[in-house]
Length: 212
Image (cartoon, rainbow, N blue to C red; front, side):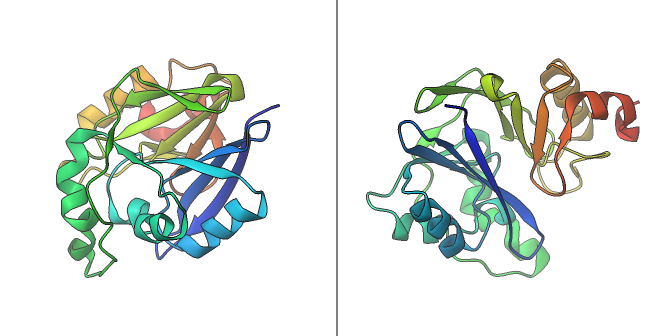
């Protein structure tokens, strides 16, 4: 059965959270639960899926703000995955105070380290971790080739790219990450970004003004 993808827009800066599931096995993962944990858990329960892992593209507050709520609601609590280079940002509660915001402490540090080239499973479906620094030092994307889908966090958006003016940002590194880890994928690959509407690799290759 094909990978099922549910999208949710959550929190104060309209972050996209994604629930990915293998209907055959009932296994699911949650990508970037930035807020509104009860809503995400309700969707999980409505489909009777079993949450196996939380995948974080990076550790900004608007992508991890709902982690603690999910961990309280789901038993046993699933492991949380993050690239080690973003652990400092996790410890700073995702930089919420930079914006005058107060979020719930996300809890203990993630217990699963993501590294470039790792293969992650959702039932029978395999997804690849790609390290894509630039927006943050430990930013990663998740590429699911069978589904033709890339979960891009804040690396690239429809017609735009991630900001690099926050601590740990590097604009040149971000552009290199896009060119080597995104634009090398098939044009038909759907890009599911951390904010805004979905797009495709081909559309961004041809029309994204930041990549010319």
